[in-house]
Amino acid sequence: MKKGNKTKLRFDTEKNVRSLRLRRFAAAFSCFFVLLAGISLLLFLSHYNFNLSAITAPTDEQTTAEETTQHIPMVNGVRSYLLVCTADDSKAVRFAGIVTADMDGRTLSIQGLDTAASIDVSGCTGNFEAQLNYGGIAQLVLAAEKLSGKKVNKYVTSTDSDFRSAINYVGGVEINVEKAIDIRRPDLTAVIGAGKQTMTGDTLLKYIRCFEGQPIKQAEIIAAAIEQKLTVSYLDKADRYYEKIINLTDSDISVVDFSAMKLSFEALLYDKTDVTVTVTP
Image (tube, rainbow, N blue to C red):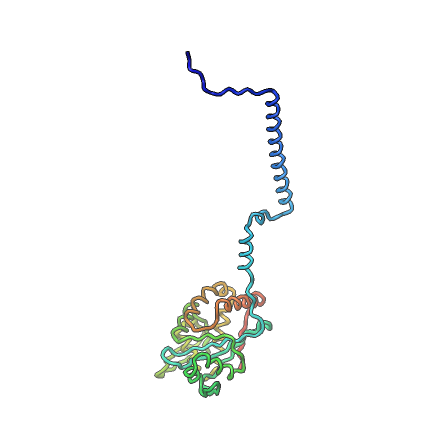
């Protein structure tokens, strides 16, 4: 005798079978209807260029993106920046000037400061070196404001070595030397030929120092350097230049300040073909 199959036998009545078939048909029809309705909705939204990705984007990410892409306000009105270079081993001031950006009038100007002038301010009477020795950069800012009659918003100071490094980092500066220079003295040796030439940081610093006591001439040299670097191509590298130069200088210009200035100068550059830096007495 063959051992039988242990599968259980199931007996369904004709009524149960008809009921089961009806339920399966209803479920299948419902799924088909839902699928068809969904496809129709997507086609409708697509026809009207609805942004489907916006449906699936998390709300938190959208909020974060909106917060991080908020524009930093551009620099408006008039802002003045004090530029100073000092000797490596002393407080001797090589040059000083105030760059003024009138963003509403869309002009840039620089005023050279007579670093040998005696200034009486905040308990100290003396030239720029005396002011710096007396109270540091804060005292020097007060002296520059009194001498120039302008409010200094931010400052940038460097030493000889840092100035050379910064100029070399940006690829030097093209200067047109009107007359050959041959200066040989204990504190400065400068032999520079006449004509247009690209100066390294060392040569440019020597050239500026050749005009100590002539703040207008020094301002003209700095103005020429600023004009060359304030271009669209250099502005594209501005973030990298800022990170490098800010580490070579002493400044109270923050990353936020820099971002605001960059936006303002971008607007200035794209609105005008050239940016001219004028020299004021």
